[in-house]
Each structure stands twice: as structure tokens, then as C-alpha cells.
Image 1 (cartoon, rainbow, N blue to C red):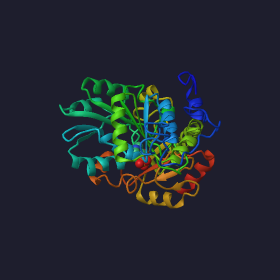
Image 2 (cartoon, helix red, strand yellow):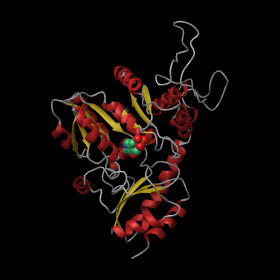
Image 3 (tube, protein in one colour):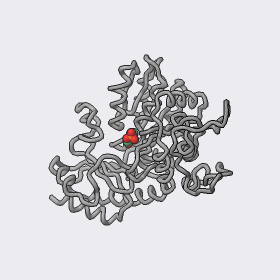
Image 4 (cartoon, rainbow, N blue to C red):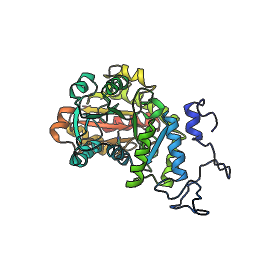
Amino acid sequence: MEDIECTKFETKAVHGRSGFEIRTGSISYPIYQSSTFRHEGLNKSTGYDYSRTANPTRDEVEKTVADLENGKACLAYSSGMAAISGILTIFASGDHIIVSDDLYGGTYRIFEEIYKNYGIEVTYTDTTNISNIEKEIKNNTKAIYLETPTNPLMKITDIKEVSKLSKKHNALLIVDNTFMTPYYQKPLNLGADIVIHSGTKYLCGHNDALAGFVILNDEKLTEKLRFIQNSIGAVLAPFDSWLILRGIKTLHIRLDRQQENAIKIADFLKKQEKVIKVLYPGLEEHEGHDILKNEASGFGGMISFYVDSKETVEKILERVKVIIFAESLGGVESLITYPYTQTHADIPDNIRQRLGVTDKLLRLSVGIENAQDLIKDLKRAIGTK
Ligand SMILES: *Cc1c(COP(=O)(O)O)cnc(C)c1O
């Protein structure tokens, strides 16, 4: 669209970068289901050669996500983990990265089980306290990697403050923005260098595709990442690119409803005898609530909560009917997850216990169903003492 600079988030989300396809006027951006592209003659190209290198549908979703995050460039990957892996390949043996200690289990796994073997040094720390990060900075520290809010404990880190530190030490600040989405939080505006998404979650929004995104401003780094992505090949397929474009069109209204429902559910959960503690960034008493209020325009639709016993966990997971017991998050359907054995099973038990990812913790991704139906479902599942 022309004047994309001036249009607001919702308009960009609905129309994408192009608004429609020029040649046919197609409102729904076409799925270019082609692996390769014809050349008219020697040294003549439409700009497309082979879909690992570039594909028009993937281009459109990349440009759209870049616009939403206020970034100059975006790369679309076949999953969130492929995006994270792509980023990690820019580092070399001997480089050191400081990472949030509470984070998505798969991210921990890729650092520990894959990239450590290639000589990438990793230090985990509670990044909510900036001085913890400062303490860990070494000569070879090349990046600081944050999740905020974290998965699953909803810990909030001040992105602006960390970016001052990362700039001072010439380290890249990488932020996984999966939980907030660009609708609520734009890390590049707050000083981050690289934003990562599991597009599988809110950007897709319908639990029907996997995707990952990397958004950044630096041209040299973009070139490097495109070279690596084309060499390794973890690209987003044309049909999945289209599914994400379609999902993004309703991102803002889905999130508004998810947050509205989440606030009601967090209030309900707080009053339950068997619920010991509710972790929802929208609650005033939530640690870091004020930071998020400053740096984001919303609190999201993710709630974690501790219950009194493992028996209560079992009861809830067996009894929920509207809410579905399944991994993942961000879709229109409400899902309940048991991080201890699902998303965070690969983190050693002593670390999980220290962080608070215990066998009494549940994580709820609030969907867009009727809030009263969701509360009724939880009420019946939790029961009373
Ligand atoms: C799901 C998730 C990932 C991994 O993304 P996939 O699309 O599942 O590969 C990374 N970070 C966060 C915060 C996630 O929730």
C-alpha cells in the first residue's frame, strides 16, 4: 500500500504490504505454489528463480510482518525454532550469549543440545534484574537473548534498559516477542536489534500452521541471514505463508478479545481456593506489571497458575471440556498446557524447580470463546475443597 508509513497497525494487518495483487486485483494474496520460475532468456529474471531463495507469497508475508514490527526486513522460516536456529548460526565458536533463565523449553534445548556442540557459550540468568545481566558480560559476549514476558512464568524484562547495556557492550539484543506480538509490543522501537517470533502462535492464530519470523533493521545482518537461510533451507512454504497472512488480518481483534477474556479468567482464578498463585502480567500485583505498562500497549492472553496439588492438576486436565489439554498457544481455541511434562520437559528438574516450573503449574492460552463458558469450564474442572 502507498503511504504505509502513515497507516495504523490494524490497517497494515488487514491489507498487508501490497493490499491486493497488482496483476489480477486479487484481494486475497495469491499462493504461488511453485518451486521454480521461468526465465525468458539468459540473464533475464522476474526476480524469482527458485522458492528456497524467494517466493512471492513468502515475500508478502515477510514484508507485512516487517511493517507490523516497524522493521526494515523480515525473514520467514518453517517454524519458530528454525528462526531461532537461523539466528544462532550467525555466531561463531567461542562467542558467548546471555539468555533469560525462564524461557521456552525448545529454545533451552537448542542452546544446550545443539549449539553448545558448536562452541557457543551460554549463560542463563534472571534478566528481570539488569544487574544480573551486567555481571555476566564478558569480552566474548556477543548477544543478549530475552523472552519477555517469559514462557511460562510471565517474568517481565525492561527491554529499553537492557538495550542500553547491550549497546554499551556491542552485543546484539535479541527479543522473542511471541507472547506480546507486535500489536502490543515492538521491541525494535525499544532498542532491540533482532525480533523473533514463533509465528505458529498469535500471528497464525488458528492452530493450523507452523511458522517463524526474524525481524531486523541492519542491512548487512539481513544479507547474512538471507544467505544462511538460502543455504540451509528452512523457509516458510507458500501455502503456510498465505495462512499466516490470513491469520494476521484479525490479529488485533483476536488479541483484544483474548486479553479481555484473560483478565476475567485471571480474576476468577485468583478467587479459587485451590489456586495458590496466578501469574498474569495484567494483574497490578504481577511483578513487572509497570514495566510492561510502559513498554507495551497490552498484557496479552497468557495466564500461568499454581494449584494446591498434583491431584488438582490431574483433575483439571482430565475434566476440562471447552478448554483443550494441548501444547501450543495463541490460537482462537483456549488451550491448557502442563509445562512440567510438555513444553519444558527438556529442562533439567533441578533448574525447573529453582525457576518455579513445578508439577503444580498450569499454563492457559486464552482463546476467543465466550468468557463465561471458559470460566464455567474451569470452575467445574477445579472443583472446591
Ligand atoms: C512456541 C515457541 C517457540 C518455538 O516456535 P515453534 O513455532 O514451535 O517452532 C519459541 N519461542 C516461544 C516463546 C514459543 O512459545
